[in-house]
Length: 260
Image 1: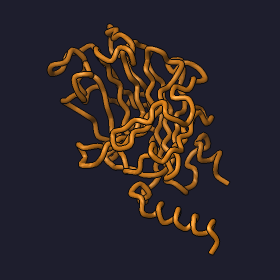
Image 2 (image 1 turned 90 degrees about the horizontal axis):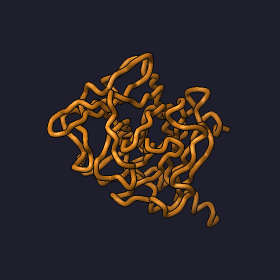
Image 3 (image 1 turned 45 degrees about the vertical axis):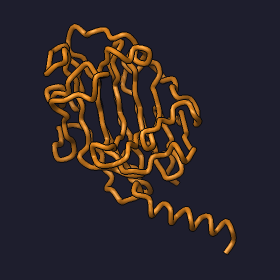
């Protein structure tokens, strides 16, 4: 057996042994209705003192075929604002994650599409992020976390790739392909960042999240908070998960473009 064959065999064994390689069914959700068997709505808590809003179920709805994730100037609990978060019940592994999203524009808010698992689930903190900091809707923040350590700025291309047009003007397609040896980020079908450093590639199956939240303290990153005078929202037209090696599910999918 050649050294190359040994390398290929070892890589295949490592992939099969990796928790994130566990089989998951592909699915496409067009949000014509809210599937409570698939999605869980965060309700009655916040993620820490950096967050100035409380997750409440009334900030998640389906309107005209889109998931609406809202932020509202209505007190809840100890916070002056309400915010929305939907997360998948299932933890998913290697594959392609795609969402078509339109955001609001407002300083001090974070419109996020990401995957996460952590100590609250009895696991280490692994994460893959798209975050539109709505102080500037012309760029998107991309990063990964492995065991709580961020890959920001270490390698792999632009951490804040430019968007083809502002995220609040029209829907944009966001996708990442997660494999054992890399994470590739796409915007409207164009590759905008690749992370290949093994230290920055998560390996724990994760839940999918959509959220819109604000801060009074992370001003350098998210901008000074400006309270909206009325409810605002990010809209998610669809979400798709395509398991690694599975066929593409819809024509606009980046999987269609990379299928042989």
